[in-house]
Image 1 (cartoon, rainbow, N blue to C red):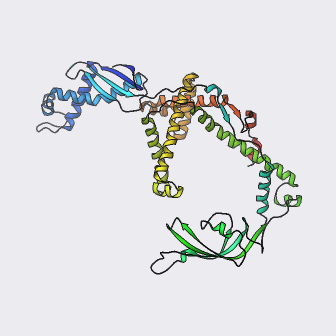
Image 2 (cartoon, one colour):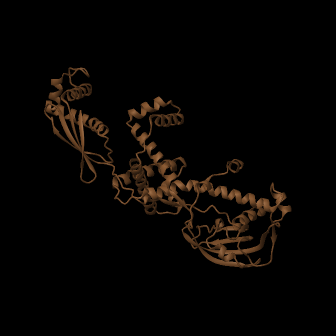
Image 3 (cartoon, rainbow, N blue to C red):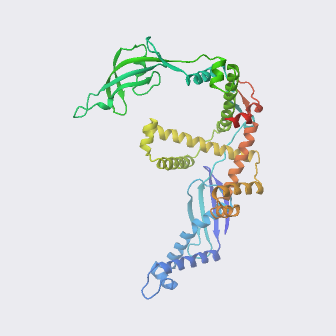
Length: 448
């Protein structure tokens, strides 16, 4: 077989392929053997039907040859794609151009290929990192949370404030109650509720703030689960506030491993900072990819976006099935319409395709290569996950034509690592951020 590739307009490639006569004769023999086994001819056992008889049954030698050509075209197209290093992203349009009656067979395949995008200025990318600074207010908030664990609820006579604990009786009346008048599902007595938690009933917090023990409030609320409005009567029975212990050294020694509040605050500040560093490290790759994607201005083929969208949709359905949940239930829980969800999913697919194309462009721009040793390491790692040895993994990938894709993925990963190490880092105020500041204190991490 001989194959050549030539670019066409519209991001397409035309493959010109010729199958020599000997290969075509072999393919024709294979088709003959298969038809001989499949076609039932009186007087002949399966697999023993003579060629002339088969030709007659099929409508002539030309029809039989046409069937052989039809069967071998996909295989030879795949070989041509591999030999010419063509990267198709859609199904080809194939046209047989010669050999339909005898001799070598030639065909042309026009196919849409993965585009090459430009990433101008990738060497000067600037990534804004989240702040690593921990404020006194954040430390105090953590201290207060710790104090709350040893706080005491004390009944008060003042009006209700956000954060108070109130004991209330709830009664709801639906305009369309059940036929038997049962509305117990909307009634609760001595219900302990934290004001400001934004739960149970929409608008309840606004109604409770400013009331006192003994007060009663009435209001209507739209209950989404019931798909109707409900008239509520809320009786406030008592109001309690959480009184916190003094944040002094005695409390710190009792509530923590530290002898003083200052030592406790210092430890909290350091832990918060280490957490910020970990979050910044996780954000660095995503923000770097986003900055790289912004450089891509070319129109992305819809076929690539749809393929990524289908894959994401399939993965989501698989995860939902594992959780015993339907897509409709998932949308209900997340509060999104199907149109909003699909738009969001498509936007993510588009960004993913752009990121892939941008990384491929970076690989070529920086001439990133993967050595045989690095590929062997990747295959060994894959084998470890699959409980196979590296040779088995290589063999299966070669048979599936996926070994080149694995090498490509490794090249993109190396390019991504290079880019992360090369981008300029600044904080939210535009000040440079040292990579040394993004180093986690291992001792702190191990203690968590």
